Image (cartoon, rainbow, N blue to C red; front, side, top):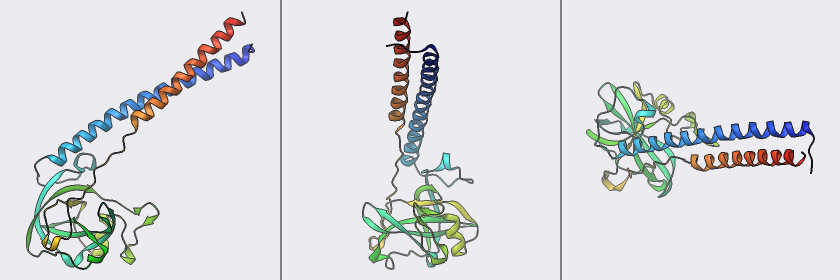
Length: 229
C-alpha cells in the first residue's frame, strides 16, 4: 500500500494537529476536574460548618451553601409558593420574606404538598433561622418560565419575587431553612439538594483517547513512508 507524498504530508499535519488539540483538551479537563474537586470540598466544608452571620455582600462563588443564622420577623402575608419537584413528590416551596432590621431576606421555609398549600405554619413574632445561603434562580426552569403577573413560579427568582410582592431592600440571595420542625409538620425544611456535575475525568479520558488515536495514525503514516522506501 502506497500513499502520494502530498497526501502523506496532509495526513501527518492532520494527525499532528489532532494530537496537539486533543492533548490540550485533555489537560484542560484534568485542570477543570481539580478545580471542581476543590469547589466541592469547599462547599462541603461550608455546609457542615457552624452557622455564621450573613455577610454584608453576597459572592455566589464564595457564599453559595454557606451555613448562616439570622434573626428577624416573617412577613407571612407575602408568602410566595414556588413549584417544587422533591424526594417527597411534587408540591411547593414556601418562600417567606424575613424582616431583619433595615433589610429583607427571602427564606425558603421548606416544602408543602399541593393539598397543604394553604395550611401550613405561619409563625408570628421574632424568629431565628438557620440555613444555607443560595443564589437567585432567575427566569424559571427549562421550558417553564416564571410568570410574575400570574403569580406562577417555577424557580426562586429573588428579584422578580421581591418586585411582585413590593418588597424593598431585598438581599440578592435566599436562605434554605434547615430541618428544624414547624408546628403541624409543614413546611418541611432541610431539603436542599447539593449536587455538582463532575464528568471531567470522563471527558479527559475521551480527549486523551483521541490523542492516542492521532499518535497511532502518525506511526502508521511513517511506516507507510518507510515501506515506500
